[in-house]
Length: 292
Image (cartoon, helix red, strand yellow):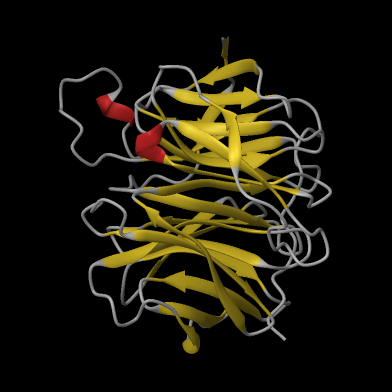
């Protein structure tokens, strides 16, 4: 385990911080408070964090082009104007199921979007993982309770995900040109007992950086599933990491404050967003999503 040089990013604490990502064209980080229905925007140029209130539970956003983003919400995919925040429905998804909402999601190197859903009260087997690209949606996996750890190898040939209560990270072979599975999922790694696997991201060398819900940090696994190290953070409920900065040499990490007891270890940090200096260009930045 290693201690990390970290600082706070923004002053607001989240009930359920999630979905961090980075727009290298604007040098801007984005993340959500899912239960607070807020999208946060942090521009590194001026160091200011702005909040954007949302009409429903939302959990992920991806850059489309200089003017638009694709926002993942409980009812579908919306095109969001970056400047004024206006939303336009692009593609419905589980809009007829009021029991579910979106959760962990990430863009494949091909520009496809893998989107996870789950029950609003974590109902057993209520969630799914979908594939989206160019206006087309396919359900890839169903019967998932809490979708998490969606990420991809640098060459796009392997996808990862977890159903958090199982404590098992899965891997599946993919077509690198489409991000679609070409085989059945198999076990990749069973993380240590120090917390449950939550959101994850893959670095330039193919290592998985896995947030640990209840584990006070982020664990790093080799492509073979070996635990390499852990970055310790003060909050207990660590939810999701993302590489940020033009050189991908920092790690933005979200956390949650939901159900945290006031006198529990790390409670004063619960819901904070952390910026960790990695000291080297370790990461890999997310591509734009393809909508047409």
